[in-house]
Image (tube, rainbow, N blue to C red; front, top):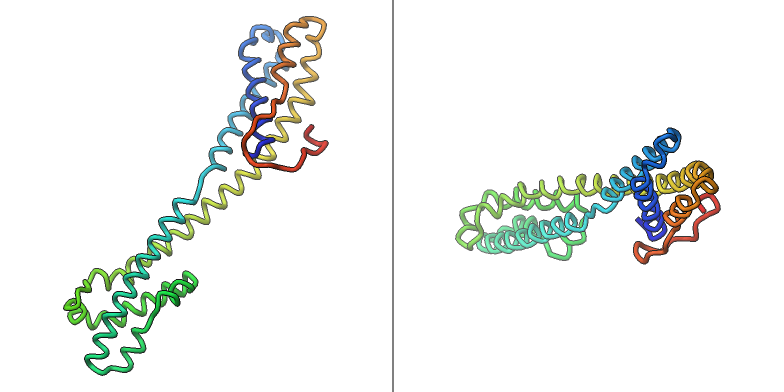
Length: 228
């Protein structure tokens, strides 16, 4: 929620609190009572959308990055072991197939990285016993195949969260505009009858209706005439 939306939402809540406090004054005003119900519903929806909008994928990206680095570390370890095996057997083909570098793996796109790790796993599998003598466990070799699934699964999860956050941001912005317009065009008009009937009540409403500029959120362009 940006700064302007936060300020408007604070006003929406203050108006709702005003109506809650003074509800007996409107018991014979069904149109106002319906408007109060609609305002409460809008505030609830705005709160829910703000929570959804605030979901962060930072942790997901950090975990994915750690998983990727761990797999690359394992790949380098297995590659080094295979180079020893290749040198021992004077196997040029194995030496070439085992050749990877941290820089090359790090710059690969995710799909290509997964393919390369699986290829290295297939290359290393027949030499499991010889690699074990170098301290390279079978589980580490297997991880080049099985643990790549973590990367494959994490990307759709992150993209789904980002899509939901983007959608919530758009819906939140529109709902704030709609609610502000509803208060300005409907509730303000309905409350005019109390200007003479109950000036104190009307004054309290006007105080609740004020928009206070509270620091926070992020800067946005000045609001358009549509939402003033």
